[in-house]
Length: 341
Image (cartoon, rainbow, N blue to C red; front, side, top):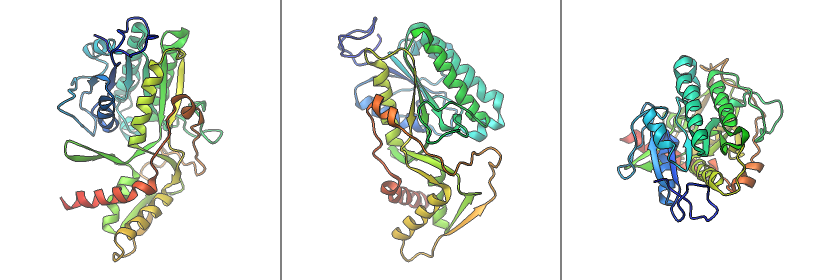
């Protein structure tokens, strides 16, 4: 049976008094692994699907996962029975898509198109995990929810294609859709007795600090917005509520899952170095070296990059609670603990 809202104004086919059933693709990935318990603790029914091909696999015995591709016939049939779909499943990463553009596009573009068609046919609202890589080099700053996509590499192009697929699915008022453009996700969470983190620049520098040397990919002035994983999952749940709410326009909406805290890589390195020194006052000062960029020609260099989230907060009613300074000691301590195992 399809899960439901306790809302007398619910859509046709919803049984009143039941919590909504949320389908989550990419459920065992880094974000999915934090999102699943967040949704379950709030009483939602869940259908989870992931083929386990990603670099991170987070599973919980109490919330079983359908181990198959989200675009498979069987998974699509189950997703069609949900009240809303949160589509996080993807072959993710700039280099992964650059190295295998055709293979990654089969899932990221063709698979997303198949899922969107299914959701349109069954009138199931859907939210799509996009990225600020879809924006590329924006003509105007800050980046807002209406900034057009202008990708500069394959991963960004595939995310931009996914955004267009969601917009097409909503045309004619067939179904409400949402695009969640996510910035650089950092931080960690506990799952199955372990701390789950993502290999971003903050995590990399926390590990490098143990050796006394941080390596910054040139030029170091590339600026990024950083958003904590727990703020990210709060945005996803808010997007689900937005899509499920009675009276939500059946049209595509874009939301900026970003904190507004933008720093360049040299600034991040400096913060890590000072944070490490505060925890280890007797240790030698950490060196910061600028090295050749292995992603040169692919990585976007925008020293003035900034993000606005005014419309996101207005429509979703969610704010970001975490800042790098408040969680950096925890990140550094976790890296040191992992190194001692």
